[in-house]
Amino acid sequence: MISRVSVAAGAVGLVLLGSPGPAAADFAAGAAAYDAGNYVVAMREWLPLAEAGDVAAMRNVGHLYRMGRGTVPDPEKAARWYRRAAERGFDRAMVNLAALYLAGQGVSQSDREAAIWLARAADAGNDVAAFNLGMLYEIGRGVPLDPAAAQRWYQVSAAKGNTAATDRLAQLSRQAAAVPAPVPATPVPAAPVPAAPQPPIQLQTAPPPPAPPAPAPVATPQPETPPPAAVAETAPAPPRQESGGDIFTSIWRSLTGPSSAPAAPPAAAPAPAQVAAATEPAAAGDSPAVAAGRTAYDRGEMARALELWLPPARAGDTRAQYLVGKLYARGDGVAADRITAATWWTVAAQRGDAQARGALDAEFNPPLTTAERAEAEQRAASFRPSTG
Image (cartoon, rainbow, N blue to C red; front, side):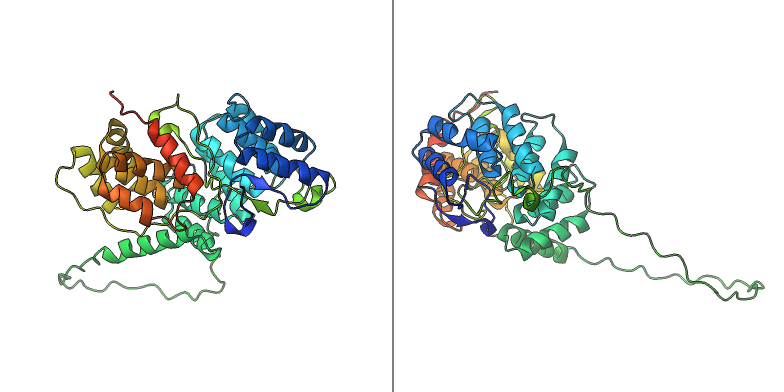
């Protein structure tokens, strides 16, 4: 069943409206059909509502097109539906649209556009958008590399209760504390120089010009359409209930390649998975790529660690699979994604990796739901090591 979770919880999956009336009944019928795996019926219930201006239905139809459920996969239609909801002020649709821009799915790949939509969603109060915008500033993707701006956005997200942002701030603080302070050089006395005549001191009669203001983290032009309150006559108020845990967008092709089926949202709406920060010491038997990735990880270069670990993970290296799962669970160097993390850990555990098996049971907070675990196991069953 689709669980009822407050929008304030921060999940960004399928949306369930709470308004009464026939439209709500149709929406609920679509949600029930989706939970039962009858995606054709879900599309049949939601599409008329989306066409009538329901922003929640627009976003759910976008999900169905993106995942190819109840219809042929069509990333371009998914992008159009996400955009329609986003332009009506729905912050969660803005996050989904940003994800498509990052991945180049259904739209021309553009890190800059992704950053703009994340900034709009963050300005609208979306803690997940704020966290991911901080990540973009930290790695310099779509925006200038700006650790200070990254810290500010992490703080905005953490203030709204996002534990991934809280963990990232703590990790950055530990990394900063570990850097030794520079030792000042001992000054060498200079030979005395005869003093030259000095001009009279001129008193300053006017204050200096003010320093230019710090640049904004990213341009955040407002949508051309009115905010949700202004479109209430033609569209329902922003949804109050939702299910799913599609934190950014689950890029399933990172596991088995572009030809694989896109990821489906989990059936519950948990907060992002949280895994305690830790360094990754080298282990006996590490391949060169895994060892190099551990070094990058310890330097805080999470995106580089992911780049190094993904090829051996796809080739069947269980150590790399565990480590890639950890990055997805924590949202380090990549958007946090419980299902993708659980999939990698399931693949590794099925091949005898005890640490991955333990992570499945202990590292998620809240624990994996039955539906999430089933989805991860289904994906893991389709995993085949790459040969190239």
